[in-house]
Length: 309
Image 1: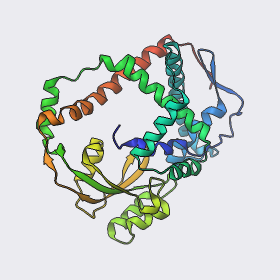
Image 2: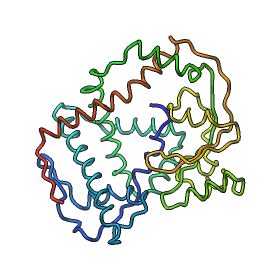
Image 3: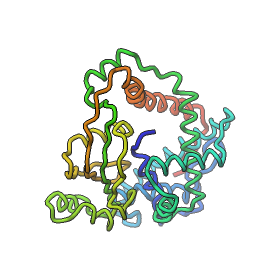
């Protein structure tokens, strides 16, 4: 997997919020006999409420909080259905599988073990809870590969057309170095970003003081990495910048983010054959997502779901 939104996986593990109107020990839903408690639901809602700046204790926010609750509960139901299907198909994720996935996360995002642990602690979750979420990610990927991936086809004509339109994206020996600033949900990102763009604030100083992203003490500097390792969305964002320039705010997993380009080497253009696998992966992703949603919908139709909110 390329450098992407997974960089911000810790953002999904924010501290829990409390919704005083609902007893914590009540049942929110039952999925094929497996319960989701109100406590579980509120724990999962917390990051989204924090991102939206919603205090669930305020009556004025009740409609919006209820909408978030339904959305999050729907995702939790899907997760249970997928986990149950993985179990039915005798799929699993061992502790060593989880260890390897965490190792890859640290490697992709250039985190030392100490930095990794610090990120977990900052988000106020236990390592056990984090590992369980990683386990679900692994099972989801395996289901995706086994039940969905084989039914997704990217044609040669599609790859050739994409190459013709995006030829400049594919180069050999091209590297990039940039820094990332990820704003905490409570920050006034727009005001701070405007001051950075005007020169009133230094980007690296703001990162050290504010960022919840990687490498804050290094000013968010991720070091040199292959241009081909970036997702297309990141390439598009960085390709608009000259060295030293800072991007406008954009969102990754609901978190407001800015990047500062340090340098981008010229590289050498790739042939269609050289770029073929990269392009196939790019075109395959949205098709996989669409097919996965269809597959999940089919599983839901067969499931016994009792929503009690």
